Image 1 (spheres, helix red, strand yellow):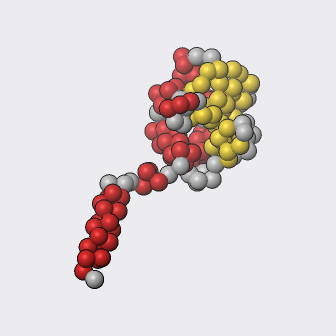
Image 2 (cartoon, one colour):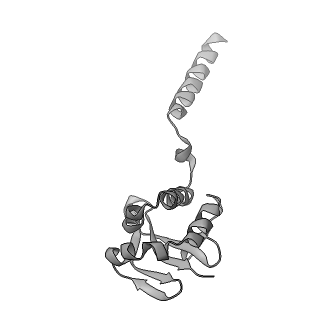
Length: 136
């Protein structure tokens, strides 16, 4: 009896040890992770994060319709593009309540949202911003 318990105890110990270093983010989907990171960038007004995640050209629908073609233009117009209503929409969203379909991943609500597409290729998922909607 004792001989059969030892191997079982050893297996259980290995299973527990292997999960000991796991964090909550290890169990999140890539989609949930990008929502959480986007929300953190919005809270911090992290313009550099946004610039690093733009996939040019980016379509923008606000008071005017634009095609964002450069980082410099985006940075000059950041406060208008990522306005308070869009920020509120993104921050109000639950991390697991995103919309994902053939067009990409949407974070936000009806007229105020950001669309991502996966440009990861062979090295995994890499979401980049393709469209920003900031309309009524």
